[in-house]
Each structure stands twice: as C-alpha cells, then as structure tokens.
Amino acid sequence: MKGGLPQVFTLCSVILLVASVAGAADIFLDWNVSFDWNIRPVLFRQPVITINGMFPGPLINSTTNDMIHVNIFNNIDEPLLMTWNGIQQRLNSWQDGVSGTNCPIKPGRNWTYEFQVKDQIGSFFYFPSTNFQRAAGGFGPLRVNNRDVILVPFPKPEAEFDLLIGDWHSIPYKDVRGILANKHMRLSPALYILINGKAPYNNVWGGEYESLKVEHGKTYRLRISNVGNALSFNFRIQNHQMILVETEGSYTDQIVLDSLDVHVGQSYSVLFTANQQESDYYIVASPTQIDTRNYPNINGVAVLHYANSNTQLSGPLPPGPDQLDRVFSINQAKSIRWNLTTGAARPNPQGTFNVTNVTISQTFILHGSEAELGDRRCYTINNVSYLTLSTPLKLADYFVNGSGVYQLDAFPTNSVNQEAALGTSVVTGNHKGWIELVFKNDLDVMDSWHLDGFGFYVVGFGDGEWNPASRETYNLYNPVVRSTVQVYPGGWTAVYAYLDNPGMWNLRSQRLENWYLGEEMYVRVHDNDLNPAKERPPPENLLLCGIFAPKGSPPAPAPAVSSAPALSPLGDW
Ligand SMILES: *[C@@H]1O[C@H](CO)[C@@H](O)[C@H](O)[C@H]1NC(C)=O
Ligand SMILES: *[C@@H]1O[C@H](CO)[C@@H](O)[C@H](O)[C@H]1NC(C)=O
Ligand SMILES: *[C@@H]1O[C@H](CO)[C@@H](O)[C@H](O)[C@H]1NC(C)=O
Ligand SMILES: *[C@@H]1O[C@H](CO)[C@@H](O)[C@H](O)[C@H]1NC(C)=O
Ligand SMILES: *[C@@H]1O[C@H](CO)[C@@H](O)[C@H](O)[C@H]1NC(C)=O
Ligand SMILES: *[C@@H]1O[C@H](CO)[C@@H](O)[C@H](O)[C@H]1NC(C)=O
Ligand SMILES: *[C@@H]1O[C@H](CO)[C@@H](O)[C@H](O)[C@H]1NC(C)=O
Ligand SMILES: *[C@@H]1O[C@H](CO)[C@@H](O)[C@H](O)[C@H]1NC(C)=O
Image 1 (cartoon, protein in one colour):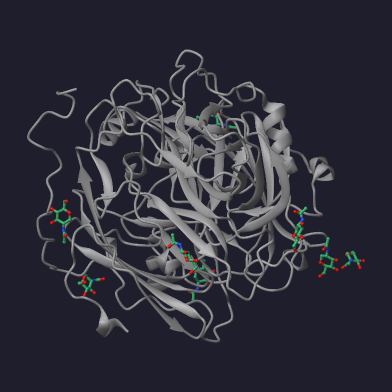
Image 2 (cartoon, helix red, strand yellow):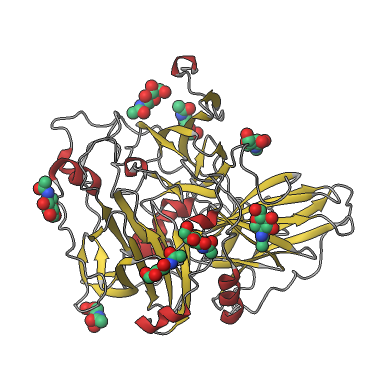
C-alpha cells in the first residue's frame, strides 16, 4: 500500500489514501507544521501554528479500528510532539506524543506516528503537547465514526460540523511562556475566544468570523471541543435547543439543553434542528465559572445562517446562565450519564462493562495546587511539581527499567505531607485493577484532569474536602465514561478507571498553564506476564534522545522557517 503513495510532499495538500484491510482502513497523512504570522485571528500579529497552511489543522476522519499514519514535518523553530487527546493507544503508549513517551521531532525533521483507533468511537482532537504550543494553534479535530455494522443511537444528521473553541492570548505564545517563567508576574486571562480559529462576529479589527450554513428542517451534529488555555465556556445557539448525544467516545443519555458547559480539553457532540424562522442566529461561547465582567468582549461568537436568510445579525447576544452559577454547572455535569443500552465501538451495549459492583484496587487522592520553588512559580500535585526530563520515561522503562532516570512510586499518592518539591512522578497503576482517582482542586479557578490510555468513569462531584464517606454520594449505576473531567474550585471530582492497558500514561491538568508549570505525573501500568504479544514493541522508527541519544549523531538540518518575519510582531496593527 505504501508503494502507491505519492513521493512528493506538497504544501496545502492533505494526502489521504484510504484502503480497505479486513474491515479497517489505513489513513495516510502528510503534515507540514509551520508558523504563519499573517493569519491574525486577533488584532495583534503573532505566530500561529498551522498544518498544511490550515488553522485549525485538518480533520482526521476515521472509523473504529482504522490505522492512522501521520508523517509530521516539523517546520517550526522548536521541538514538536503531537498528542491525540482521548485516543487510547491500546498497548501502544509509544505513539502517545507526550514528553514522557516520545522524543520530540526536531526542527527541520519529520517523523511518522502510526496508531490504531482501536475499539473507540467519538469526538476528539489533537494538539502539540509541549512548550505551550497549543496556545499558538496546531490543533485539529479527530473523529472516530461507527463501523457500519453498529447502530448509532440517533438518526443520521444532515451534516456534521467540528467546532474547536478556545480562549486565545493577544501576545505570542513564547511571550506567554516568558510571563510564566517569572514568579513575580501573573498571566491575566486571555482576552479572546476563537471559534475554529476565527474572530468573534462583528469584531472591530475586521477578522473573519465562523458561519455555519444550514437548511430549514434539517438536523445537524456539532462536535464541540474546548482547545483553549484556561477558560471553561458555556455554549449556546440563539433560539435553538440542543440534544446532547456523545462525549469523548461515549454515547450519553440524550438530554435536551439550552446551553452546555465545556471545560478545557473536553469534547461533546450535540444535535440541533434548524427549526426556527429562516434567519441568522448567534452561536456563543462565553466564559463560565470565572468573573470576566471587566472584559465583556471575551465571548466567542459565530453565526448560524439559514440558507434563505437575508437578515443581518444585530442586538445583544443570547444570555447564558450566570457566569458564577456553580449549581447550574454541577447539576448539568451530574446529569450527563452513560447510555447503558446502546452499542458504541462494539455491538454489545456500553453498560455491559460497568462499575456497579467493582472492587477498587487503588485509591489516589490528588491535590492540584500552586507553590513557589526558588525563583519559579509552579503548579503541583500533592506538592510535587513535575520535572520534565530529556529522556522519555517510556524509553527508560523499556531499556533500563527506569534505572537512573526515575524512581518508581516515590510520589505520595494520597497525602500532601511535605514541602513543595520538583520530582519526576511515576507511580504504579495495578494492571487489570480498578483505580479510584479523587481530584481535589485547591485553586480558585476551574481545573480539568485527563488520563491518557483510559476512560474515566465519572462517579462523583463534591464541594470541600473528599472523605471516604463521600463515596456514598457516587453514581455507580451509569457514570459517563470520558477522558477529561472538570474539577470545580475548592471541590473534588472522583473517577474510576480500569487499568487494562499496559504502558506509561500521562495524567495531567488540561489547563495549559498548570500543565506547563508542573501539574502532571505518569502512571506506569506494567504487565508482569512475560508472554509476548502483550504491550507492543517500540516502533521501527523509534526516536532516541536524552541518555539514549546516539553518540556523535549529526546535528539536525537548519529549520525551514525562521521564527520571526521581517516586521516587528507587535508593530503594525
Ligand atoms: C512547509 O511550510 C513552510 C511554510 O509555509 C514552507 O516554507 C515549506 O516549504 C513547507 N515544506 C514543505 C515540505 O512543503
Ligand atoms: C467521514 O467518513 C465517513 C465514513 O466513511 C463519511 O461518511 C463522511 O462523509 C466523511 N466525512 C468527511 C467530512 O470526510
Ligand atoms: C520522513 O518523510 C519521508 C518522506 O515522506 C518518509 O519516507 C520517511 O519515512 C519519514 N521519516 C520518518 C522517520 O517518519
Ligand atoms: C440509548 O440508546 C438507545 C439505542 O440503543 C436509544 O434507543 C435510547 O433512546 C437511548 N436512551 C437515551 C436516554 O438517550
Ligand atoms: C453491570 O454488569 C453486570 C455484569 O455484567 C450486569 O449483571 C449488570 O446488569 C450491569 N449493570 C447495568 C446497570 O447494566
Ligand atoms: C456484587 O458484589 C457482591 C459482594 O462482593 C456480591 O455478593 C454480588 O453477587 C455482586 N453482584 C453482582 C451482580 O455481581
Ligand atoms: C524494575 O524496577 C522495579 C522497581 O522500580 C523493580 O521492582 C523490578 O524488580 C525491576 N525489574 C527488573 C527486571 O529489574
Ligand atoms: C506544600 O508546600 C508548601 C511550600 O513548601 C507549604 O507551605 C505547604 O505547607 C505544603 N502543603 C502541605 C499540606 O504540607
């Protein structure tokens, strides 16, 4: 199949070849990742990370069990890792694209990720995982469609739209990093929310806005992801109700919504029917669970445009719930339940694999907090701020059993009993055990947590401290399964996960500032059974770096793109 691939890599062409192999297909993609200083989604000129010239990057449109091959050419001026948010990388943490599993692709080089979207369906996105690059773009939608043989629990919509929405800073992402490196500075909230990389409707600087074209009477699916830095948003469509159907690979009980809260790193599918008078309507993503009354223009605003509409939108945006209404937000979160009777990636119902009666083998209580360490401000888990090494943990695990790189289980998994410190936290997750993770948010802002390799069964939310009696409030009947869960300021969120996927798995805050400054750790799930054909061997193109870097290897060629254009980045607006 590879022999049939065009050998020439062309700009702006997504080379997508699909071939049928025993039901599943191979999808081949060539991606040129580079900076574009001319896109200007906001007033200020800044580098935007594009893929084949696109921002957001191209859709990966796959079906359960497809093999995806993405050959990534790094044409930005720093190392690059791409991660696949919510894709479980079954037995294959080698392709996870985070600093603990992969060596980065150096500037001017290319590398091919090859992974299977095994036993999954749903809405996801990909993004660059290091160096705060997600704040500059490089993200894009990833769909995993149902196989034909498995019924989807709602009629086929007329069309689907991917909406990648996130807050956006007005300064270049490297300048944001500069602020974060200085403990005397505080990063203020971003001043913009972009919808598919586009400016809000009616912006004063003439930036292009997003518009969705619909026909009267038809039903559409929106796949909404929060690709932002820090802000949770409330999503709504003027005069239209939505039906929630899916989140991060699970079909939910279908509930009717006027608006939906989406926290950083989360993805949802909703259906809506264009059943209103033929006109234009606002689509709004406004910050929630934070007071932004001093910055009234942060809202992301797009347009829902009926085919025969010739009205020009004006007037106020449709109001959402009160920004600080936590009760609304938590009640909505608790109402998102797993549909137990529908099949998803497999024909048997989702509910056959449930937590009603499982035995927990481990409990971790993880406090997300802040601390100062010497001249740095950092974020911590149980007072440990993650120290990223140049040697990926997975390589160290494979070649030298971790020796000399990380110390297994030195991390306190259920206490905060020490002075804040830096540490490369790697803890054992019991293979084929159920783990209970309690995330406690000691900050005064929303946080959200994500574990690679597994789904979270979201069993409970609560205020204040968690204690064992809090378990009595858990929903063990039909908790939704997803990969990113929010934790409210001062509160806790409890999840279960079944650790049947050996590998080195990243557990992190999805809030970019928190992750970048250390709210991260790894869970090592090891299968002691040496019988082969369990975890996959390293890929043939395995990159080596850190202590495993080949001796005397030639330096990488100079990057194809310089980091700055001739004009001053902040100069000409
Ligand atoms: C990738 O994009 C950059 C910037 O647009 C361009 O200079 C370079 O030639 C492209 N590389 C390839 C291989 O197309
Ligand atoms: C994605 O793939 C599905 C299934 O093959 C197909 O029906 C659909 O048209 C594709 N969508 C896009 C946007 O390519
Ligand atoms: C780099 O790209 C070339 C050209 O497409 C390809 O043959 C090669 O396998 C890629 N290298 C890696 C490490 O993926
Ligand atoms: C759950 O999925 C089934 C399809 O198996 C569907 O008929 C039913 O309406 C769904 N239930 C809810 C509450 O959405
Ligand atoms: C959970 O799974 C068990 C074992 O398969 C099954 O007996 C039970 O009915 C399931 N519970 C639900 C709510 O589907
Ligand atoms: C649930 O667990 C209890 C105690 O461990 C056991 O007695 C019971 O049979 C289990 N029920 C199911 C449906 O597995
Ligand atoms: C690998 O390291 C762990 C502790 O980090 C130890 O328990 C185990 O025995 C080691 N395995 C081998 C094969 O050395
Ligand atoms: C966490 O570390 C900070 C700074 O060293 C310290 O002030 C704080 O008391 C520690 N927290 C706990 C619960 O010990």
